Image (cartoon, rainbow, N blue to C red; front, side):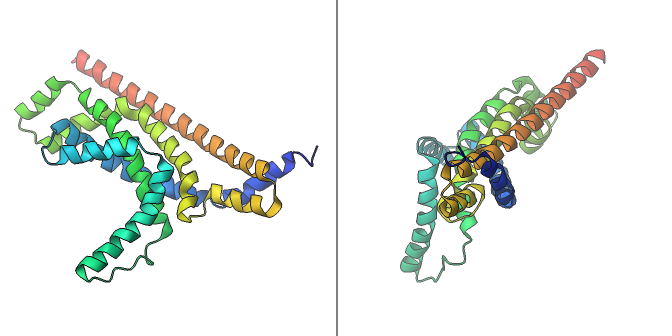
Length: 243
């Protein structure tokens, strides 16, 4: 049976793969933060329907949502150096692509890919905020930024938390494609181990277990956050009703 499937190897692989967990988490967390910032900006543009920016962000969202992440990673990995070389040719500059860390391409592709999806649920969460509250804010002289920071984002956050959790989970799983940009993270490390011992199934099973445990932890954290935010929101409502 050991010749067919070595369960012991599945678990002995895990400590070796966990050495690359910091790289996976680094890619995921940096991309996640960038994704939220870009997604929020795109959502605001789509809500405001800014004349110049709206067609651009609509094309970006449509293209990104309609093409595979793997293809986007390759486009980023090969496209950015081509653009820099084109700039060098057109303007006589001397930008070098060798100084760009490989991880940058993975971060860029993952951030832009996830932001296209995040922008839609962020937009829906923002639009769920009661319009009467926005009018009240403007009536007392609050600026758009103050309204966004004090009213819109806190209330929209309650609605968006489940989707934010799913976005982070998808981001974690998306890092498994970072090897296409020559970044050695958990999946790439598993491929290297498999190429050495020819135990491909065991290596990928080890990888699957690690990702599964990470997603379980993240799911639990966001469930706790969601419950906490709902309790706080109910507390505010009760206080207001009492007053």
